[in-house]
Length: 580
Image (cartoon, rainbow, N blue to C red; front, side, top):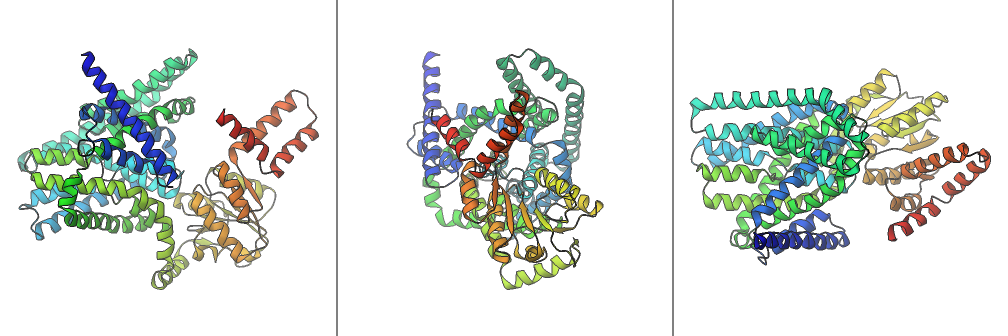
């Protein structure tokens, strides 16, 4: 037993060490760190240097990483935000899965890749799933979880995770039509009972449990309770034949609305990141370079076919649900991979003889490559969307579509303030400006937010704030100022440049997403770059000093000096603190 434990510790050390090295190199090369994790898994896996002996144990820990990823998402993804994208989550994902299955089944039968419609349907089910783990990790790294395209992608992915449970129940019955309906009914009943139980627990049980544990003021006990809740609910869904991801996400949702949700999330983040690295490394271990090399042409063709085909399926779905062209492009390029849980379906298909050993190996290789390419595709998707929007034919169509969209901008508007983004930050800005009597024009790409603006009779433009077609309608040349409160850093920078091209003299106040952006945004021409965390700290400092009896004017002078210096003294202190 001691020998086995020692070997296991050795394997964990190798995986974590190589992941740290791979992530570091990827970061230095300005690539997503998860790309480094995947490549490190390939390097140390059985098809690389062969340093790992107990792959199954690593995979078990990797599943915990997925559970923690989805639990953290559930805590951050509140029920209110979930309701905002419920239409595309339910209808859009159902349409995406159905279309993918139908197109893949038809194509594989016509091309002779499968012999029966049953096998074609199975292949379509495998290809219909996308990767929640890879997409979520990439969005988190890029700070885009709360963007419109981020929430749209996650809504579809969460629905896919629920569909996985139904697939695992129904697909084995494809060869036995008499069992198909009972299997579907049983799987649906399990899902309904689970969600009913989760809602009841989230309303009556979990808030009381977390409050009781929090009152002990024992940090370790609180952390253990959070972990047990996450993994316990995930285990329940697994035993019901549903996905582990879905259980962990629902567990996060159940505490997202209680007072201790932020504390639970803060406790989970280090564990989430550690175990997630194991997950991505374990995916890399599945890649067989020999198989890839021997079937290079076929796999390249399959990768191109899958990624292009899924993008073509996803794009019109997002587009037709009322989202902008840019959101639809980014979403389609973010969901065009094959999901990691397709490995589960592929193994099931091989066992049921739906796919051959050769097809299984090709599918594993194709899936692994699409996962590796996903972070790269998501990185360049905003630029791709911009270039596509500038193609004359597409630009002309978008211009006509924009004219037909809901735009409420008086032609006489003048001396107004343009607010880009109507999220939590943008709503406060609009409220402050409106209360002071300023005319406000909001640019927003959320249909729900636009409905709210319409009800309040606030001038608005529906669309992406960094799109030229949208900015042309905002009368920036007549505006007094522009406030950029977008959650997407790349869109923020793009909008800043384009706004100054239209009106070089306009005052622009922009939200900085992190410390390193402050100087960059100022150099690009922003009048002020506001960092929300620093502002919160400054206001807390003001309140404390006032409570201690310090002169209010002196305190205001000190705080204004810090702001004038673009938080430089605070940033220097923070850097010294981090190094120490």
